[in-house]
Every structure is written in structure tokens, then in C-alpha cells.
Amino acid sequence: MVLSTRRTFELVGIENIDDLYNQVVQHLQLADWFGRNLDALDDVLRGDCGAVDPKGTTFVWKESAQSKTLLGENLFDEIVDVFRTHSRGGEEEDDDVELVLV
Image 1 (spheres, rainbow, N blue to C red):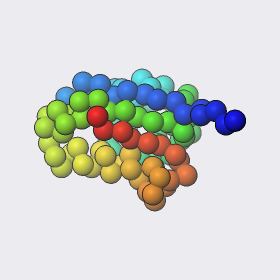
Image 2 (image 1 turned 60 degrees about the vertical axis):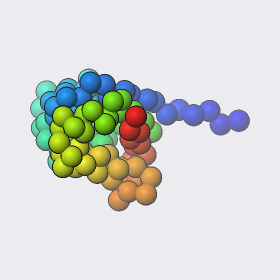
Image 3 (image 1 turned 180 degrees about the vertical axis):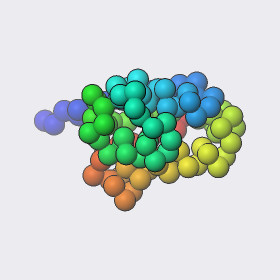
């Protein structure tokens, strides 16, 4: 019997990009030097940046449709693309990060 060791973090109440960065910083226990931009988010999802390794993590983005409206479709899609790069089928799928939009 194989037990799942995936960890799950919820992204909740994302109304602007800083809300997203703040929650990622909190969940992965990132240092103050985190760049707070999409390139930095991409780097963080590779691992070795914070106290919590994102490998094997599922991020559940609650109220994602509302976040999409508030962030704007282009920015929302860019954020999702960053996560999906590190998910199954993405260019860096070995990072084993999953994003679930609810």
C-alpha cells in the first residue's frame, strides 16, 4: 500500500498579485528576498528557495473565477501558466507541482 505524501495549500481571497505572492511566501516559508514577480515564482516552484520544498504540492486556488476577474484575464493566465510549467505535462513536470482551480 502506497500512501500519498502530497501536501495541499489553499490560495484564498486572491484579489491582486500581492495576495498571491503573500500566500506563496507564507506556505513555502520563503525568505524576505523573494522577488515578488512571475520569474521569481517560477524559480520558487523549482524548489530550494524556501523552508518548504514545493515538490509534491497541490495548490488549490479557491474562488479562482473571481480572482481572474480581479486580476485580469491576461495576468491570471500568466500565473496559471507558471504553475502548469511545473505540473504533469509541463516543461518542468519533475517538480510535481499541481494547481487546482476551484
